[in-house]
Length: 399
Ligand SMILES: CC(C)(COP(=O)(O)OP(=O)(O)OC[C@H]1O[C@@H](n2cnc3c(N)ncnc32)[C@H](O)[C@@H]1OP(=O)(O)O)[C@@H](O)C(=O)NCCC(=O)NCCS
Image (cartoon, rainbow, N blue to C red; front, side, top):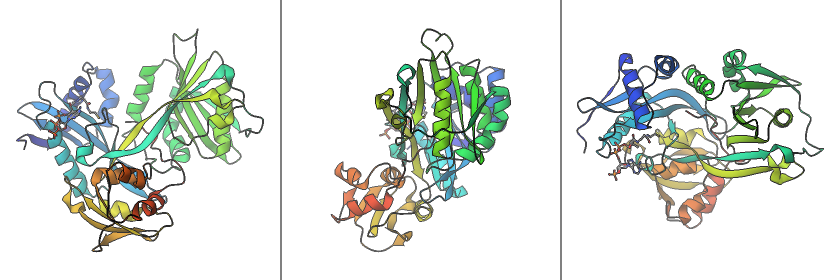
């Protein structure tokens, strides 16, 4: 048990928390210029600190919404800025922060929490599980020849960052919310995102795609400076509302001069880059990594909000160490999900439920590897169908 004092920080304490977080990532304290956009990313009332007696640990979150299977949007807490002072780690500081933060989310009626983990071994104990995966895709531009049947796409206009940044929120909202696990981005999100891109490159461009019904896709990119000999184009955002916009934006990317390689760091698993090219090996998936970690804060609400595939209903029994109000049995079927007293067919913990929730991992695979206890042999296959989704789920927002 920890005897640490955890409390919500006042706005005048946010900068100290930010510097503590940076130090935990081995980064020097931020300048006044860096703090200006970062300050706006600290939502008032959502920054926690641990004192012992000075500030020794912190985490924060900001409000958002996330698309769940079937299209409903649930209140989401996006968790970030987690850091514990060097010399004070492994004494329960993070556990104290997690307990306070999850209790706060539950009290405020937040259904889901999401984070991007620095290391894979940290967050499972708090009920987070890998919920989305993403591919790093690299395209060899010299080899890139589009197949003749690839759609033409529409018009593309290129904007510099000063002109594009005020338009990003609207572009994002119009083009990025179609996929399961997409999250809304409020005014809390954008200043930090813009500052990060400005730090990365002197010239950041946004290509806006316009189809027959108006703007339907955009991408933001830069070409690494010092890469004249081997031009490397980094795609930092790529969102589109239909396949023609996907193809049109690819046509644009391939038209950028002095580029040898196009890098797309975190893309949905089912995005068909390879299918665009005469030689499908033009687009290589270099790695697949966990993209986001999900926590069902309100299990009954989260289970009830999503749609399910056509299969026999299954009773799952959930145990949740950090939020025991979620403990219990749930009948999950094509008609929905609700609490039940019936005998369970599958038993699982909160982190495993988070892995199952978006269908990224099949129930059968979770059972085969010991994460789900099977009490009815037919249940994993039924749960595969119930929780499965047609498209790969993808968050697409880094924070
Ligand atoms: C990761 C970090 C926040 C952990 O804080 P902490 O106060 O040391 O964590 P706690 O002492 O509360 O640890 C709780 C449990 O998690 C384990 N744990 C913590 N960090 C871990 C890590 N990096 N790898 C594996 N296990 C870890 C602890 O061993 C402990 O296990 P136990 O409950 O079985 O005893 C801290 O090490 C840190 O600031 N790291 C650098 C910044 C960072 O990675 N932040 C996360 C950004 S997503």
